[in-house]
Amino acid sequence: MPVFLNAGESDFESRFVALLTAKREDAPDVDDAVAAIIADVRARGDAAVIELTARFDRLDLTPETLAFSADEIDAHCARVSPEDRAALELAAARIRAYHDRQMPDDARWTDEIGADLGWRWSAVGAAGLYVPGGLASYPSSVLMNAIPAQVAGVARLAICAPTPDGVANPLVLLAARLSGVETVYRIGGAQAIAALAYGTETIAPVDKITGPGNAYVAAAKRRVFGRVGIDMIAGPSEILVIADADNDPDWIALDLLSQAEHDESAQALLITTDAEFGQSVASAVEKRLETLERRAIAGASWRDFGAVIVVDTLEQAAALSDRIAPEHLELCVADPEALLARICHAGAVFLGPWTPEAVGDYIGGPNHVLPTARSARFSSGLSVLDFLKRTTIARMTPQVLAAIGPAGERLAQSESLQAHGLSIRARLDRLNQR
Image (tube, rainbow, N blue to C red; front, side, top):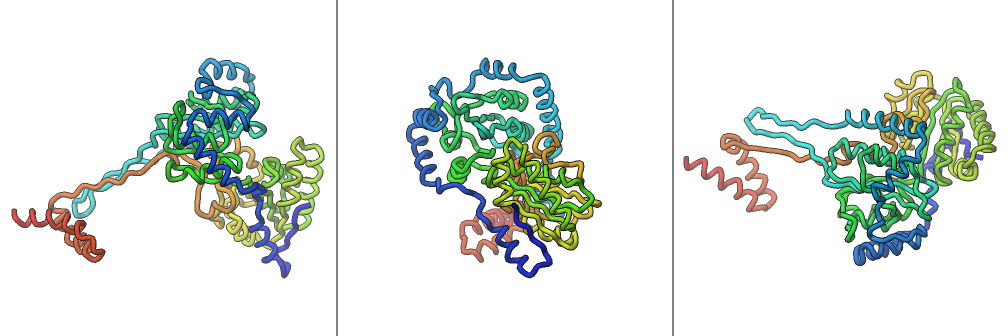
């Protein structure tokens, strides 16, 4: 059974803090192993990647077969049913339309003293997109990573999608095609991240790496950051539902389970103003777990990390939500817009009972690569902006430099940076000679 908390009880604060700080990543310390893998790939390139893929994925490759050929991708795509293709095409179209709107504008203007200022946006040169393989093989993740990169204008995209035992997911390859990605490497783990960051004889290095993965992938992304950019270090999935009693308990139960079934370390939380409703949702979860295919995973998540929190008011719910800063937040209340206005920290928000979080995972349009582990307090989900760089622009005329240069020279002197000041003074002196 999950934890039941009541905001009116004297020990609520200590129990809530314990819930917030509970360690959910049940992974061994993998950093040393990851460091060794990265060093091996840097030293031996293709040979290291091939050996590690044989060891971990039980797949024998050569430099020529690291990537799927165009014919192989065609063959796999042909295996996708018309119904699945149509669903994936609809998702791709909606995701593209949403991310098209995120493209920022360049700007140039002349300020009040005549300085020409501005900025421009340009895409990173190349991006590597990691897509989990095996049991957690998600074509939706291909769309969510590749389409924003393509919209941003990234010139070269490559996907790493591990294929344990050589078993590929045709939907993953079709999603790559729909996203405009032709290069799909059948490798994974820390060795894939190292190859993308440093390059091998066959795999060209990239400028940015995005996409979720296991503890080894996360540790590798952390280690290569600085050599390349990364999107985030993703942890186990999480959902918070704020619901009043005017909801179907079974709907809310399914929404909680939609994230609990991801991982035994996932977290599903319910905040409600009605204790009886909270009990009804918990009962509905237990009933659904009896028939859920992934009941062992979802059941462990709900048992170890789930919680039902009872509050007196929705204002209390909003305050607790901001402390949780959830990856996914559902507002199943009479006036979700009013409650949304009180909330600052969430990766993605789903308004009203007809907007289940699962819609956001696939077909809604917004990105499903989102900040976890309370990092929504300071970060955002994946977007077109993750694949863009902003370059500032400035142009001074002699008249402008005459007006503001002396202040710049003064500040340089205050910081004891003589050459800085002299670079301005030399130009001011030239003006004074005219």
